[in-house]
Image (tube, rainbow, N blue to C red; front, side, top):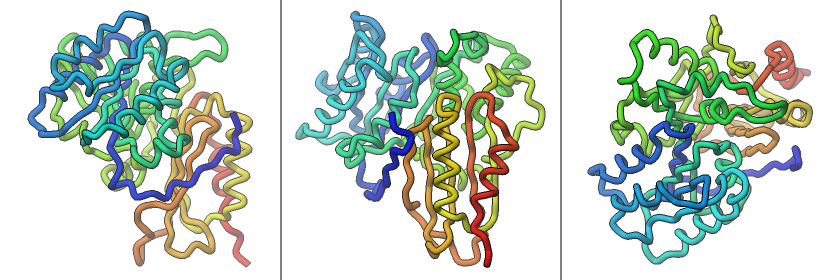
Length: 347
């Protein structure tokens, strides 16, 4: 994989089919949520892509009963969507695109063992997929009874803790099965989740029952949308007792114009030296010499996506560059100093 792989997204997002990626550790309630969505009174035509780890497909059968036409569900078995069958994911999406029937939305239910990062970046690094689809949200189901145990599990050297990754990459987290824990346990769980991903909305649920308006058509994968709806996006956890496996988030805000070359060098050096530990990086940026153009940066490990934002800097709007880094063993001072060093030098 090449750390210098950079793609620029220019196509109109509004015309693309929205995709909801549902992640969560084994048994968290993902299939129950899919069925809840399919039974909902939303009038949408939804296609479902199921992924299971193992040769016997169970979830497909559980979901099929709520799909009006059996062709609207595609199952990918005997592998994890983040690795062995990612080619199948591309083929499934292209297959849906080429059908005469149009869909209002696509739901991808990943196996509980999936790392969501490569799943998400399929939508950026494959041009044909990027042309027809956009990620609406990455939704993580967290089992209130077991998620803390999964997140604290020590993995072999270099291995990913999938439960931590799933929480870190989510735009929205459904804290499910809250009927199985006490109120004080819920409060501790909320601190645990926020310690890893301070920006994601956490929605408490039982049996995966949730208002569909907060999980469909939310466009929460957009960093701009996140900043608009949650001004505290970059607020830090002042007391972080749950620094699980060293995972934390570092938010930085710097007013002024950035030097493009300096920013590019900073990010490339950072990702080349620390790609495995840098789960996600994202930002809204202002560059010298680009007028009112606003830029959006999205990174998953060493893969980055960079391009113009849907809107420009408004007249009188402070040109505040915002970056957030989510990863393991992050050095806050190095990140802050490096980002501040990207400001354009005034003559």
